[in-house]
Length: 231
Image 1 (cartoon, rainbow, N blue to C red):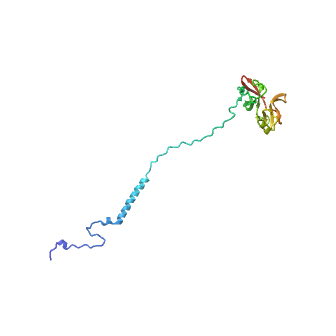
Image 2: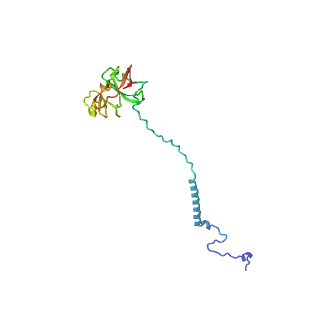
Image 3: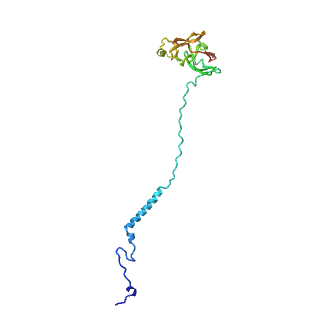
């Protein structure tokens, strides 16, 4: 019997277990296992997703747009007062017109007469008559436009057809002054005597008004027409 080395003779052999690599075999089974590789891939994907989400959710520097100017409220332009340019006859400045601008017969001009006692501005009208000279006060008629008794206001009617249609006054041959409330008509060319033995202009041609419009005394100074006193 041939001689064997002493250690080899008494060395027990390791049992072989199926599925378990023998001692000293290369450890490649774990790396080659598809389950492990799948889990590793999932971990890598999760890490990438986590990093990507943190990058997307990072605070961003917001560029603030310049503040818009406050809205401008557009206010409507104040209404133009048509009476603002009308002359006002006061004690210190009684001029209401010039002889030149009132040269044509039946020319009219509106103005205000300021009451010297109360300071009230009374609407009035200046009419150039066909009788009398333009250089004399009797060539004009100045009258207050408020009806003496009532809340109406006189009107100067130059349209003869309107006198027919609105006042049923068919005998007019020239402009007249009318009271639209009572349909009374006054003739600028005629004088009438009123109680107190006063002669005033504007005889009643039609209607039942108590008296003609209140007159305003005029003076001519150079080329200016002055309203100096109310009846």
